[in-house]
Image (cartoon, rainbow, N blue to C red; front, side, top):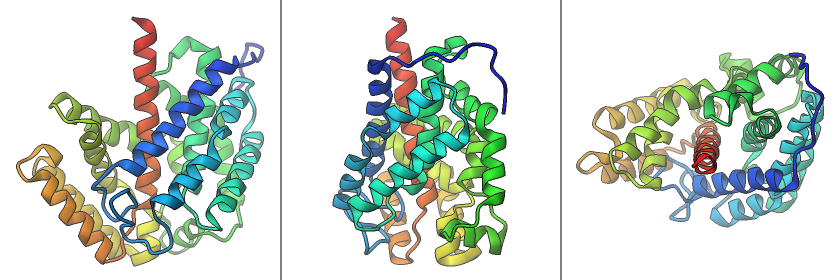
Length: 293
């Protein structure tokens, strides 16, 4: 783990609560986003019959306060083991709130790490709170330990089963590398859509399609193998190549693809987690710009 020359500093309560609010808002934006292929929204449950928007709202409510705790730990330069312990407790609260349904396990991990990095940035503002600097902090401070923990993990999970069968990377690899899918695909798609006049929901739609197009999504692999992953990626690439949500009939086409995913039981849950991470980083940068005015 990278050594830091400065002594740890406490994160003021308002800063920790601000990061918590941004993370909770990101989860709410991800839930509200529609149409996003195969995923739960307020419109329908997508490819799922074990969860709906109410399940997600209960989960989000249970996670409030978790991200401020992670932000404080990040500011205090906690190691990955300490962060992971905080995350496990939050995960237990999520499962208790949902009756054992996994709504946000991936987001607890990825968004929690970003909250910790944002907490560090708040007390060590040398790199600012840009999306790239916050993601780089995750890789620099905890990436090595994230990889080591992944190699040593023996838990039974969908991700573990997929890694064993297909050798596909997962959420740990994405975080350890500094969230390249978010930085290189989701955020550019979001920003391009906004620059072209898209509203927040429309920009989120383009962002999730950009993620699906490139991500080796473990949920897709678990449910349908490499054939499902390839089909999902081709549909997403075709949608983006045709102009995305801003194209004539773009929304209609997005709804059609959503229905294809739902009908074929394809649920890109990994993409949903990274969409929430994207929304968090957008909110963080917007706050940073507002504070500088």
